[in-house]
Image (cartoon, rainbow, N blue to C red; front, side, top):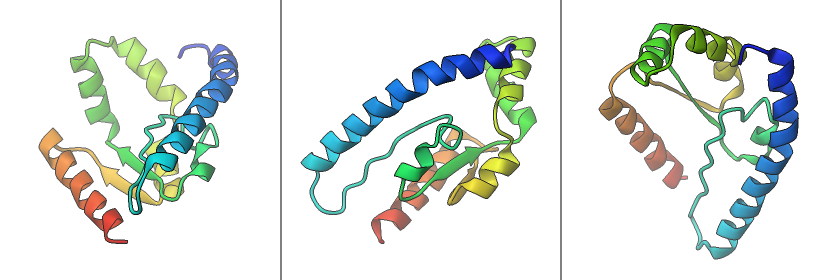
Length: 126
C-alpha cells in the first residue's frame, strides 16, 4: 500500500482474473436459481475495477476514519500499515456519491446486521 505504482500494477494483473472468476460464479449461480433469488458479491474495489456496471444495485458500507483506524488496530495492524491502506482507498464521500445505497457502520456489529437485514427485506419486496 505504500507504493502506488506497484499497487496499480498488482491491480492490473489481478483484476482481470478476479473479475472473470466472479463472472463465472455469478453465471453458474444464476443458472441454478429460481425466481426472486439474488447474487451478492463483496468487492472491495467495486467502482475502481469497473465491476459496478455488472450490478443491479450497489451498496457501500462506510465508517468514519477514526472508527476504521480503531477496528484495524484491534485486528493487529500497525498505525503505519493502516495509514498506507487508508490513503490508497477511495474516500467515503466518493463511495456515497457512487453507490445506490449507503450503510453507515459507525456502531456495533449488531446494529450493522440490523441495517443489512432491513436492506435485504427491501430488496426482496421489489
